[in-house]
Structures are given as C-alpha cells and as structure tokens.
Figure 1 (cartoon, one colour):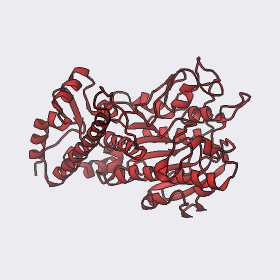
Figure 2 (figure 1 turned 180 degrees about the horizontal axis):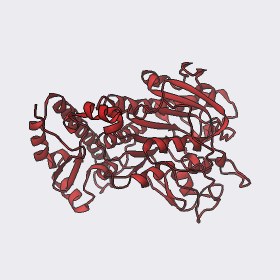
Figure 3 (figure 1 turned 90 degrees about the horizontal axis):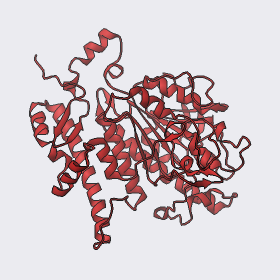
Figure 4 (figure 1 turned 135 degrees about the horizontal axis):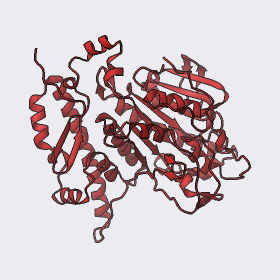
Length: 449
C-alpha cells in the first residue's frame, strides 16, 4: 500500500505567513514498525516533549490546597476540585522549597524574590538597577533546543512588565515582573497581548505583512488557504478530521482576539486605540492558555512560561465576589473572611488551569494526547503568603512527559527538598540536561516511571 508521507515539520505557507501543523498519521505512517525496531515507544521516537511553567503570586491557603492521603491513596483538596477530570494525569508535590527566596541577610522583599527564584532557584542581588539572579530552567532548555522550532520559547503574562525602578523593598521591578531569565542579567520580558503572542507564533514577524493582513482583515488561514486546500485533498479520513479540528481552533482563536479588539474600538470610537488586553481575567487567561496549546500542537515551540500576575500582584477578582486586592488579602492574619476570599481566588485560578489541561487532553497526538506528551508545572514561589514562607510550596505537575513520569499521586517529599532538583529532572526529560541549576543537590526521582 502506498501512502503519502509528510515531513513532521511540514508548514503551510502564504503571503509572509508560516503555519505549523499538528502531528498527522501521514507524518509517521510506519511509526509502530520503526519504534519496534528501535526498541522505543512511538511517543518517545516521534513526539516531542513540551514544557510549560505557570506562576501565580502571593502563595495559597495551604490547608485548602493540601490533598489528603499520599501516593496513589489520596483525594484532591478543596482548591483542586476543578482538576478532578485530570487526577490520573497529574501529581501534587508537597515538601519542595526555594531556599534562595529567603532573605539571607537582605531583609524584606519576599515577593520579588519568590518570582525571581521560581524557575532559577538562585538568590537575586538586592538592587534596583544592576540586576543579577540566574538562568531559568526554561531558558536552559531553550538554549539547547534553539533552531529546532520556530520559537525556542514563548513567555506570556496577564500583567505588563516593568524592568526599571524598584517594586519591592529595594528589589528591581525586573525581579517581580519576570520568571524567565536568559542570563543572570537578562530577563525574557513576557508578551501580554493575545494578538501579539499569536503573531509571534504564526505571523511572519514582518511588520509590513502584518499591517497588510490587518488592512484586508484576513485570517492567517486565508493567507495560507492554497496550501491548506491542497493538503486536505491529499489527507486520509483521520488526518482530515485532525486538520479540520485544528483549523477550527485557529479560526476560533482569531475571532475571539478580533472580538476583543472590536470591543475596545467600540468603547472609545473617536480614538486610535492601541491593541490591548481583554479586561476580563478569565477571557485573557484562557486566550493565553489557548495560544500555548496551539504553539505546542503545531510544534511552533516546545517551551512556554506564563505569569498569571506579577509577584505581589494586587489584582481584584470581582468576578468571583472578591472586592479586595489579592496582595493585601494575602496578609490575612488569619481573619476568616480574608482566608475565605483567598481560597476563592486559589480555586478560581485552578479553574483556569483546568481549562488548559482540558485543551491539551482533548487534542489527540500520535497514540496519546498533547497532555500525555507534556509536563506542566503550576505553582508559586511562596506557600503561606501571610508569613512569606518559601518551603512546602504549592506545586502541581501535570502530564507524563511521554510516559517518563508516573502520575496520579500526591508525592510528599522530605522537608526542604530543593525545587531545583525537580528542574534538573525536567531538563533531563526535555533532552537538555545540565549538571546543576540554582541550589540543586541531585535529581528528583520521585516521579520516575
């Protein structure tokens, strides 16, 4: 039987745009035979592992966060209830610490330190100008994978960055605004505009082409329509369904971004409104999660980070009935109403994270789903925001990373286990190993399959 074979990196092209494709059967028609002869699984041989790291500020209400039971014999906590559908594909990790988030003689500034150390596990120099911290785990991997994808990594956020001035007790705003660091002195500033993030992944990067597409209000799928039509005609039933679902997802995301911009223009009809961010936290977060999922699905990037807010963020979550700023609430002094409101925020943020996992797990890829082929770190660099604790951090790891991790467990580590040990294992899993990172003392083996 003859079959059309497509290269894994096949792209749709047109008028300055390049669109990657999801993994199709035609890209690996003999994957079972190849895998058997190589002694590996199809996923290990052909499907890349993706890594996403998602940060939330101000810690959590830990009594509502911590699950009951350990190992396989455990129950999701009150905060984690939105993750019920994915319990078998995630682990809750207890006992991890970021010692370098502590003062070590530098006094106040725990919020700036919690974000600066979140992916570096390195102690930031207390300064408002000559910043210095460490290289983050995502960028250690991105540097080694450079050139294998359209983007080595993408950095997203819901609140803008400030890289100048002091934001927390003498610490530079760069520490509070960034979790991704390419070098000890160079943060990877995050993109907060859904449209710009989308165009980084799927646009040409050419400003004139973007302006021309906007002028004619064309979808990126219209731009590559010729390639898309030819590919659909050549595709078999299974691949055709995958492509139609993928094109539908891209079109839907474009339309949602366009609606957001139209609402902004309607609100101020007499002004030239710059492209901005959705006012709704829920819509903004879900757009960014969708962009990450599409980036992974098309293999446009394998690495992503997202900050749900800057460290010490004071967002007000009125949509869930919380009318006080998040940061001020985190200093709750055990007042019952403040604790309740904080727990509501924690639950709301997890709901959006569950949406992301839904998206990944509903996307078929090879012999599994996109979630099966990913490792998603979700957490904060502070546990108890009231006391600024940097141990027993609130951490969830979702996805089995192509079967390399056991999942479906509450893993309780020895107290003060460096979170940097988890980073080393994540780097090994990405195929981008490092001898050390931050204050690592060894590999994290508690999830090994």
